[in-house]
Length: 104
Image (cartoon, rainbow, N blue to C red; front, side, top):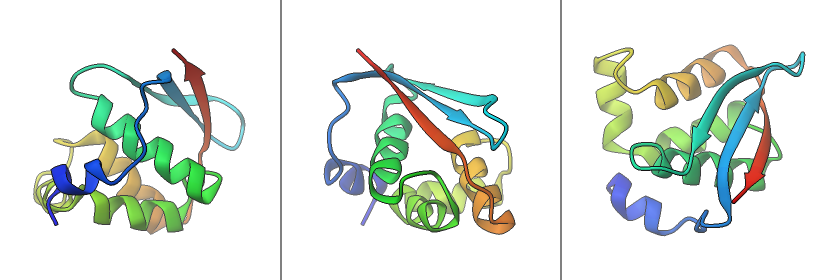
């Protein structure tokens, strides 16, 4: 399935304005906003956090499947898709990020 199809299977995030990704030291390493250009990634990351409790290697693997054709593009063009690049790094390094959701 294509990313757009996978995205429709995920819960909506209308109740969120953003989410922060925190490293093990509690430092914010990224913020995804509920705005054009980031809303899809916000939806993916929020669903992964709900299911896995964090963005860990298992969540990252699932996220890369959700991103579908965009994952292949990210692998071919590192830096073009930072939210996918992050998942690749988490999967490959066995890292984990805590998710803090910000209500709308």
